[in-house]
Each structure stands twice: as C-alpha cells, then as structure tokens.
Length: 509
Ligand SMILES: Cc1ncc(COP(=O)(O)O)c(C=O)c1O
Image 1 (tube, protein in one colour):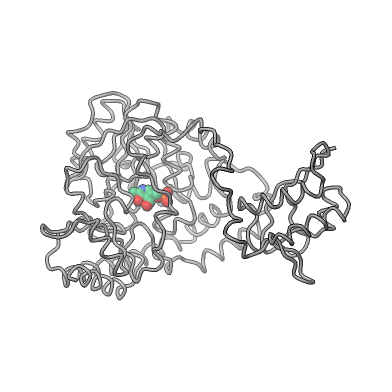
Image 2 (cartoon, rainbow, N blue to C red):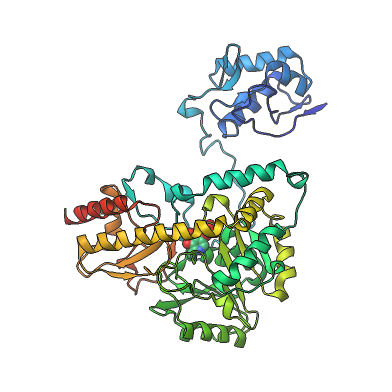
C-alpha cells in the first residue's frame, strides 16, 4: 500500500486545520512507518521546506491523513521532539523548533547527492554572464547604511498605499470567478486600454490595446522578446556600457553580444553591425547606466539601420516618467514607421518593483507570436494587481501620483546636485536631466569609483560603481572606472545632504 498526502508547506499563521505535509509512506520499505514519518519531517526541516515556528498537524490530523494509527504518529513526533527538531506548546500545538542547532541545517557536501548538470544552464560559456550576481548578494548589508544612494529604487514612502489598498479591496469584493479562472495571457484588457491611453500623450507611442502584452516587469519582457527574436549565434547589439539584466538574458539565449559605444548623444550608430537579422537593446530616453539621451538624429539613423538590416530594436523606457528639463521626449517607438521597435515599459520605477508589472508594445505583425509566447512562458500576470492598476490609472490617481513624485524627485535631484557642488566643487555630471539616478565622473586624482564605493561603505554611505549598479562594461579602455552612480529618489533632501557630507568626510579622511 502507498499512502500519499498532498504537497503544501504549512504557513506559520495556521493554528488549526493545519496544512498537510507531503509525506509518502511505503509499506514495502524496510523502515517502520514511524521511522518513515520521522525521516521525512526531519528532511523537510533540514532542507528548509519547514522553518522555525512553522506549525505541524496534530497527531490526530496526521494519522487521519496518512491512514496510520494515532500511536505511530505520536511515536514519530516524540522522536522528533527528543532530537530537538520540533516542540509542543501546551494547548497551542506542535511547531518546528525555532532554534535548531547550526549543524541541523543542510547536509554537508559529502552527504549531498551529486547534482546532475543542468540541461540548460544560462549560457555557461557567456563571458558576461560570469559576472552575474544574485539579488541576495547585491542587497547584503545595505540596510545598515546611514544613507544609501543605491540606484533604481523608488521612494517607498511615496508608494500610494491608501489608494492601492482601496483598489485591491474593491476588486477582491467583486472578483467573482476572476481569481479562479485563467485569464487572457496577454493581460487584463482594462489595463491594456488604460496603458494605450496613457502612452500616446505621455510617450508619443500610439498603439492599440491589442498590441500590449502585460509582463512581470521589463525583465520578463526581455525574456519574452528574447525568446522570440534570439537564436543561438545571432547578434544582439547592446550599449557599451549597458544594463546587465537585458544583456544577460540575450546572452543566455545564445546571442553574440555586439557592444556599441555610448557618447554624449547616445548610441554611436556608426558602429552598428552591417549584418541582417540582429536585435538591438537600447535605452534611448535615459541611457543605462550613463544617463545620456539619444539625439533625434541618432534615433532616426538607428531606425533606418533596423529597416535596412531587417533588425528589431528593443526599446527599454524604464524610467522615462521622470524628465526634469523640458517636455518628455517622444519614445523611439513613436518614430517607428516600419514596425521595427518593440517597446518595453515598467511600473517598477513609477510605482515599485515589488509589483512585478510591466508591459511590452509589440508591432502589429508580431502580436500573435507575442501572445503565444507569453502563454508558453507563464500564462499571464496576476489578475488582482492588474485590475488594481487599471483602476488606479482610470481614476486619474496614477497621473496625479506621477506629477507628485516627479516634483519630489526633482527636488531631491537638486539637493544632490547642490550637495555635490558644496562638498566637491564643480562636478562633471551625466544624466541629471531625467530618471532616478545621475552619474558623476570623478575628477583626475580621485580614487576610482570602486575605491570611493568602498570608502563610502566604511563610512555608512552607499554609492555605486558601474559594477554594483547593475551595469555591464565591455573592456576597460573607457572612463568606466571613474563613473560613480548616485540614485537620489529614495532619500529625503536632508538624508542626501548628510550622506554627501559624510562621503566627503570619508574621502578627505
Ligand atoms: C535599465 C533598466 N531596465 C529594466 C529594469 C528592470 O525593471 P523591472 O523591474 O521592470 O524588471 C531596470 C531595473 O533596475 C533597469 O535599470
């Protein structure tokens, strides 16, 4: 006989009617049923499926679930208690011990079975992928900093929490079958309509809601576009330096990266490859990481290159909601007359990356392929967040939110420019006209950006060299070592002033 219980990790808040444990008992096994239960719960604790203070089913629930006698469950629990893996709280229940000895965690390398190589490693040969760092590594220790000029994070205090919870609650009330159904993989129509309405005046992107695919942020969008347009050995043009999140995806799909240098006018279009069928990933509005804006002349030349060489352009318009000088520039997509541009936008910067919501505007002839690929990848995004975002946009609150944070971020940018000037005199600055970070080219005689970053960290101030700021460089024959990235939107003006004063003190010291 085989007795199977369904999977589910118990959530710590459950106090009665506990979630079931995934335990499979086999009568053919040499070990007793009690030992099998003991071993399997112990393994779940050791490999982290069950964590400290997670509740366990009662022995009565467990025996009913597994079809064993209550005594078998009691004996298994008693052994787990005796060895310190679990404990009982009188009248409350049985829980995983919160303070397991260190030795309990994870088996040693010798005990672990050898892992079979993955069939599909993200292109292990890829040169640039070797520098990939996971988020967990990148975020280590930053919470301890007195001021963190880390890039790419919006101000958490400005998240429109009240309106957001209102829309979430309202949608939950009227959800009907929406949460229990599969919805359109391309995304909620109301959100796509709201976006089409927003993008025309805001970015000059005139499109139909049908052309929009809702994705889990730009990163999901890079994967979607990459899976459609990249084949092993094909060429992917990237800016040099560029945003690593996109370059790594393209490389992991087998593309050969073709870096094209950036100057004050953006991408140097004279260095584009003369070959057919490439994909070009660009950030024309606020180049990542340098911050320059691609000139109109260059935009037109890039578009004609794409038409001539049958290439597609991935336009990443990640932070274009924030333009502090003049009117917003029309996106490259707004100039595209030959269906060469795939536009990627995100709510990560204007709302928050925790939402994981973004959008891709596909050229009409590719829409069906995009829809199908999105279905293959993940069948679409969460209905609830899309619905709340659609309502937030349709009610006009999104527009007001943007105006409010744009003003706030402008003041913070001014505070940063003022503080840099006060403590360091004339500074060579790039990218201050838009976006959420600017770049300071450190003067001759200064330590390198990596050294400034290290000294800053020691003094409790976080600043980013290109490597820390998720930028990817190709070679070292440029000014990259002297470029320091400073995100300014998540700090108050006072925090900015104090932070730069501290940094100046650390560098003088
Ligand atoms: C240039 C650029 N593009 C895209 C992204 C990713 O955004 P998302 O959160 O939408 O995946 C980032 C994130 O920092 C970015 O800097």
